[in-house]
Image (cartoon, rainbow, N blue to C red):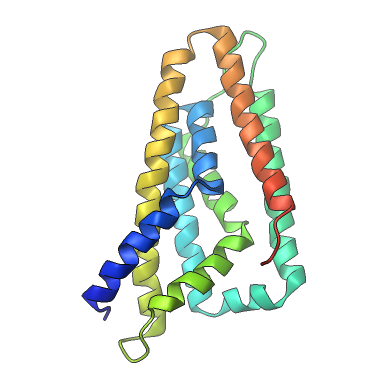
Length: 206
C-alpha cells in the first residue's frame, strides 16, 4: 500500500520532527519531574495516541475544517490553554509544605498527555501539511496511507518523548529525597506547564 522507498524517506523526516524540542517533549519532561518514570512513559503514550487522533481527523477532512474556520482553531486552542494552566496549578498545589511532590497515576498521566496533544490545533495543521507530501494517489486508500504514516510519526514520538520523560523521572528519583530539591522539582514542572500554556495562547495559525 505504501512504497517502501517513500516510507524510507518519510521515517527520517518524521524522526527529525520528533527530535525537535516542542510542547509534547516539554510536557513529558514536566511529567517526569512531577511524578516519575511510569507517569512520564504513560504521558508519552498519551501524546502518541493524541497524534494518531490528529492523523485520523486529518484523514477524514476535519483538519481542513480547522484550517478554514479561525473560530474553531481558537476554541480548541483556548481549551488547551486553560487545561495546561489547570495542570500548572495542580503541580504548584501538589508541592507540600514538607517538600514532597504528589504523584500522578499512569492512567491519569496517559489521559492528560492525550488531552494536551489533542487540544493543540497546530498539530492537526502540521499533520495536514506534512503527511500529504508523502501520499501517493492510486497507491491505496488515502485514509489508510494517512494511518501508516501517522503510526510511524506516533511511534517515533513515543520513543523520543518517553526517553526524555524517563530521564527526567530518574533524575527526580535521585533528587526527591531532599525536601528542598523536591520542592524545586514541583515548581519546575508547574513552570513548564505554565510556559506551555503561554506558548499555546500566543500561537498563530500560520
